[in-house]
Length: 307
Figure (cartoon, rainbow, N blue to C red):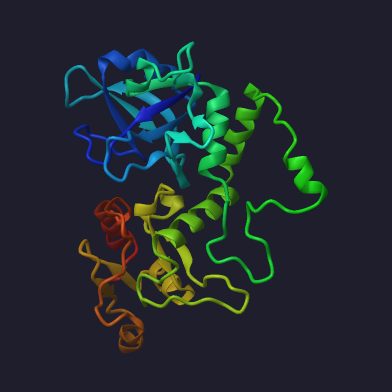
């Protein structure tokens, strides 16, 4: 088993669904197979407009021949393992190239950087995960509390500035345990959704902040985790507490065009319609790839929504 990097473009010609499968040609079979049972990081190249850089992590469950395309293969992603980064990591940062394993002996970027599937060292895995999931600032931090990631003053700050110890394989495994925690994933998923929707409820359109300075919206999975729904922004909605309750119980849903649907079985249909924003179309994220995916919306209508 080994860590790896899979290159994925938002405009990819391959049959990729990052949270489910990754398609690749035969030439990368041995490298992809080495990642079976382990974690990979997705990277979008800088040539893509509005590139996301290193943008997500997932675990490879198995690699199989693509039944629909000769000489093509599929790396199947373990259900529930995919996780978007709360802040994408650029190819190059203030201290230089992030992925040190692609540098040659002269410290320059080698041809390995062009490989769609390539191995990733535990040190690089640690570094990218730490940057991608770092909490540099709170979405709406509670008043009087420092935002996560802001270096404190005093002795603790001195400790943080000590020289870093060398990365070890065991440290990478600690990151894996972190990524597998449901509590951690729920916290990260909320940050992703609240950021994507600018802390605004997709149904009511309201952007509310409580007395402590915290956004009131909650992160709702469209297809539930229990039903195999992934922790990906396109499987999420920012909803107020009441809207979240109604969505989970099938009293409201969304069409593929994001029209807000209200169940005929509710005892106060007019009251719900009065809560819905005037357009009766759900607000959506700015980035097209973050928009609720029709696949997840269809699942909610078929399995949760009370027609």
